[in-house]
Structure formats: C-alpha cells, structure tokens
Image 1 (cartoon, rainbow, N blue to C red):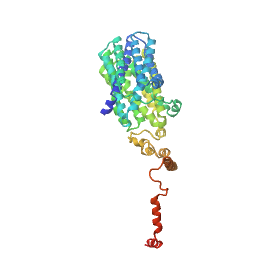
Image 2 (cartoon, rainbow, N blue to C red; image 1 turned 45 degrees about the vertical axis):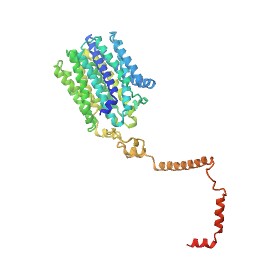
Image 3 (tube, rainbow, N blue to C red; image 1 turned 90 degrees about the vertical axis):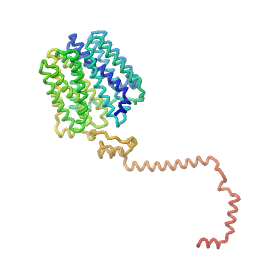
Image 4 (cartoon, one colour; image 1 turned 180 degrees about the vertical axis):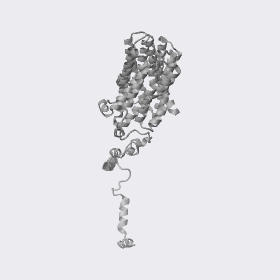
Amino acid sequence: MRKPLALFFPLYTTTLLMLLGSGLLTTYISLRLSAVHVSGAMIGAIIAANYIGLVIGGKVGHILIARVGHIRAYVSCSGIITAAVLGHGLTDIIPIWVVLRLIIGLCMMVQYMVLESWLNDQAESSQRGVVFGFYMVASYLGMALGQVVLMLNSDLGVSTLIVIALCFALCLVPIALTTRTNVGHMSPAPMELKFFIGAIPKVLAITLLIGMVVGSFYGLAPIYTSQQSLSTQQTGLFMALAIFAGLLAQFPLSWLSDRYNRNMLMRINAILLAVAALPLALLTHISFPLLLGIGFIVSLMQFTLYPLVVALANDMIEPERRVSLSACLLMAFGVGACIGPLAVGALIEPLGGNILYAFFAICGGGIVALSRTSKKEEETQMAVDAPVPHIAMPDSLSSSPLSPALNPAFDEQMIQDTMPAPENVVEPLVEESEAAEQEEEEEEEEESKYPPQGADPEVDTGLQRAFTLLEDSVPEETTDKTIHK
C-alpha cells in the first residue's frame, strides 16, 4: 500500500490541489450569482458550459498531449485555468462568465486525461486498483476540502477567486518536478455511438439521467441551500458532507458489485434516491441538522449510480469494444450533465429550489423504469466474457500462446480460437530446423575462406608413408587370425 502512494505522490498531490480549486469554484459561482439575483436559467447555462467544455476537451486533449507531451499539456492548461479564474473578478458580464466556464471545463478535461493516462501507463497490473483507489480518494478529498475553504472564508469577493487561482497555480509544482516522465503515447478512443444505441439503448439512457442528476447537484445545490436561508458557512458544510458521502459510498459499492447483480443494485439505489429526495422536494423549510442528514443519504445514493452503470455496460459488451464504450458513456454522461442544470435552472425561479430534489426523485424513478428487465433479457444481454476479478499472471506468460488457457475470463471456444492450430505449430518447427541447417552450411563456407591451421590431412607426409609401409609388411595370415579372434 505504501509503494504506490510513494511512487505517485506528486500526481496525487496535484489531483488534490486541482480538485480543491475546482470544487471551490463551482460552489462559489453558484453562491455569487445567487447573491446578485441572477436568474436560475443563467446559472444553469454557466454550469452547463463547464460540462460542454469537458465534452469538447476529450477530443482536444488527445491532439494536445500527442503534440507537446503530458507535462507541457498539463502546465499550459493549468495556466489558462488560472487566468480564466481571475477573469471572473474582472467583469460581471454573464455571457463572458459562460465562455470562461467553457474554457475551464475544456482545460480541466485535458488535465484529467493527463493524470489518468499517466497513472494507467505507469501503474503495474497488480497495483492498478490501489493506484486508482488513491486517485479517487484524492479527488473526493480535494472537492470536500474546497467546501471547507468556503466555510473558513465566507467572502464572495475577489479574495476567494485568488485562493482558487492559487490552487490551480500550485498544482503545477508537483507534476512539473516529478521524474516519472516516460509516459506512453495516447491513441484516441473510437466512437461507435450508433452500435451502442442499438446494443444498449437503456444503459445509455440511464447514463444520461445520471449525468443530469450529478451535473444539477454540483451546480444548483448551493442555490437550493441559499433559498433555505443557509449561510455561506452552512452551505460549505452541506456540500462538504455531500461530497464526502460520495467518497464513503465507493468502498461498500465495490464490495457489493462483485457479489450481487449490478442491475438489481442500481435499481435499489435509484429507488432509495427517489425516496430520500422526496422530503427535500416537498418540505419548503427544514431544520439544518435534518437537512444535513437527508442530503448525506441522497448523495450516498446518487454517487454510486455512475460506477454501477459503467460496470453493467462492460458486462454487456465484448472486450474489443470496451475502449469505445468508455468514450460513449462519458459522452452520454457529459450531455446529461449539460441538460440537467439547464432544465432545473429554468424551473428554479418559478417553482423554487425544492424542484432540484424533485428532479432527483423523477430521475430516480426513470432509472428504475429503464433498469427493469426480465431474467431472459439479462441472460441474453450479458457478454460471454463478462469481467471477473483480476487474477495476476507472471509477465513471462503474458505473451505466451498458453496465456489464453490460463485466463479464467476466456471460455473453451475463445481458447481454441486464440491458440495456434497443431499444424500451424509443426510447420514453424520444421522451418526452424531447416533454417538451423542452412546456418551450419553458411558457417562451414565462412570457415573455408580461411587457411586451416597445422598439417593438411590430405597431403602425403613422411609419417603417413611410414604407416603405409608398415601396414603392407604385415603378413596376411596374421591379419586373418586377428580377424578370427
């Protein structure tokens, strides 16, 4: 456990500082705009612009990293984000804020790609789970600490923007000083959206709904708390506990998802999300301790949905399409995260902040409806080689023809398709023996180019003549007796 933490400590520190600034910026913008009575639709547009930038950044990131490398891409994007954050303090023109949030979202996606591809490339197979576990802890911890900073510094002026800019500037230092720079080249993931719409339409629709829930929460939950007459410190505490709930939920979720049906778990979580959100949707005013408790439970449920739908989707798709699947799931989530804040933001002004949690309950019901499948449908949808717990194999076997037979994820037909046929094995052996004989003949030819050392056995030397005379002088009878003996 200590070795991955020591090896990737600079990347974890960078992630913590980056998410600290990002989490603080999202809550700050919502509270700042709510304080100056900006409409919910405009606030939703600003939050949606951030997620639009994330979607666009997925394509831009591959090009930028391929051209200038991981460290330069990260440093340049961090510099742009720092300037964009400070730009919020230079103007109050809302359309400019929309553009700034789009730029920040785009650059942050590049930073995510740098960090995650770096970790994935440098982590060993046997430690990849631990490495990314620490990465998720650093991410959630950074976002939660951002809300704590808001509790300590309740000022919604330029000073908070300076703190955010400092976080994005300081996150440059660990990654710029790291010595682990030999990261492999990134190749863009193919997009097979048409195939996945036909193969797993319900899963993509569920992913879209989950994106709508998560995107609306991060952007508009501070609006809800401000309409509940909470102070800036109380809003910071509410958001910090909610994000911390997302961190706590990952540990039991990973244990349960490997032991129980993932579709059933997602349906149960969606039901609990809808039920837990109803009190906050129906009650116009609620005490602060009760608000913290119910908000904590709602966050536990909503932050477990995306990992479950990703695992379920991978169960239903063949291995060669899973890279493309990840790209399509992220795109569906990003589109949902854009739609959610726009829709809820437009409804907050006429219907009040409670519409946020009513929206969560509706989305939870939609997920339950979409996840209902018969047992026959579940059996036909599952891929033949649905993922199993990782079993480490020695590196010497990873490239061996026998490795498919040792992999429990492969069935008999896959092994026969992967293993070479017997006639294909004999032919290379024959070719190898012929090649060896040809090499021996070439070596003999090379040796013949040089004069032999010592006497030539073919030359009739004096010793050879003496031996011939001695042999001729032996009587034939003696030779016959010797032979009879």
